[in-house]
Length: 136
Image (cartoon, rainbow, N blue to C red; front, side):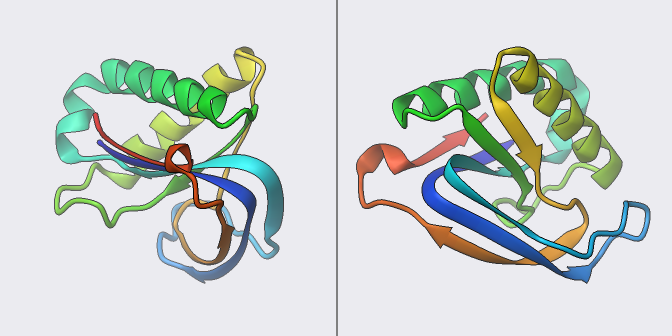
């Protein structure tokens, strides 16, 4: 898994083009403030040990959120960080499990629409802990 975490003063999205027909339709976007946005690329090798990847992802999200003094996290599928890709259904399952675990740990956690290209608005401060990359 490749994980790019960006702390944003403001993050917003609007659904633009649906690319995966098996997933729900979305028509409207959303805007968040004081949020850690996780750009997540699940790789094919992650399918073999999904529970371990899930645990590492949750730990990294909690750590980065604390570093940036926020309890808000947005999960965004960003399949552009590696040539290897996990199946969309496995990736969505992972996102759902991570979202539930984050909420159980008292974080506000949401997902961007899965299976869409989105127009995004990212406003991030120029501080080192606002941009963190991990290869899980």
